[in-house]
Length: 470
Image (cartoon, rainbow, N blue to C red; front, side, top):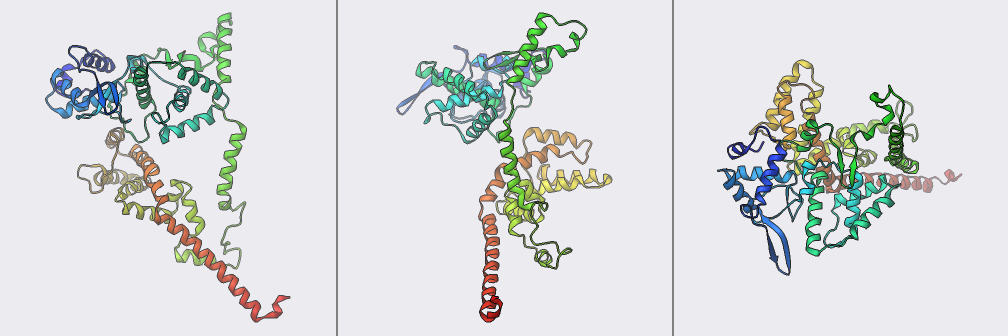
């Protein structure tokens, strides 16, 4: 997995991939033969313990006998993606062959330690960030959202989380040392809680491989050790059913029951609040609660529904529903067409066209599935495709493997990736765009015009027919 040529020369067929990477990182940090770590002066401040990306690339080419700089960058990006080194300026864990400053991760945070941090650890980290210098460590938007969500989830134990964060924040260190440790801790969470939208460029997840090779490992948390088998009650294990419980068994059961008391749970009030919000949002669309407008022409003499269908213009109620979620917009044919027009204006309509093509594939007769699947590949994913889409490496590899035996769900991974991409990027811009806002306001203006016209007509009838006042 370290690449061809130089990477293959260095690869050992016995040692795990993580040990090979750590051996490379150890050699890079060697005081005599490694990359020199230095402190750089930047205007009025100093940046301690950094190296440049160009220095790392040059070292990899020289010491691993790599001839192609692109291959050295690829190997360096694999090392960065696993968290062994990281850029100090952003959260993108990849290597660049330029003057970008990088810092090496502390061995304490290396993946070989089988780190599997819990959400409680992440909550403590984010809470601690809010206590520190806000101008230097201000939370990003996605981190603020995660903190709010974790605070709602850990309502019962938030006081414990806050106390842990406060205790760590009070631990005084040298200013330079603290700056380095803060960046290393941030890089650790960039690996385990990555920035939304960042693609993992690794070809193999080292942590998953170690779990498969060592299933009896001890699960490790940032703040202590937790037994791997603790998720199941000791008295319910098959090996202990044939004998009576001992004092040790009872103690283990007590520990297990105490851990169950701290399990994630949501207050009934929060559940009720969410249910009420959902009910209020969809109340006007429920015919059992609110009579549909216009009324059903089959049960009344009102023909407005037929007129509305003939006009093919979506009502204000339908347009407003498109803003609930991307799913609601795509379920409505008119909403899907409007969203497609918006994507065409942004030159990204191929994403929705691909999603619709995969939906159509799932409804195809079995004898047409293989041919249609190949057509989708040629149009959207093959080299030189007319409507090429952007997929991450994992989804692309899974899809290409599925097409060896094509079926209706061969593009499931790719479709899910494209849907999430549209939901987080294009759909949010669509709701803020003039296209959607003008359509929403146009429907409101039509309704207002009809109300004013009806009111004026009524006044006219009253003025011309005084006897109607009775």
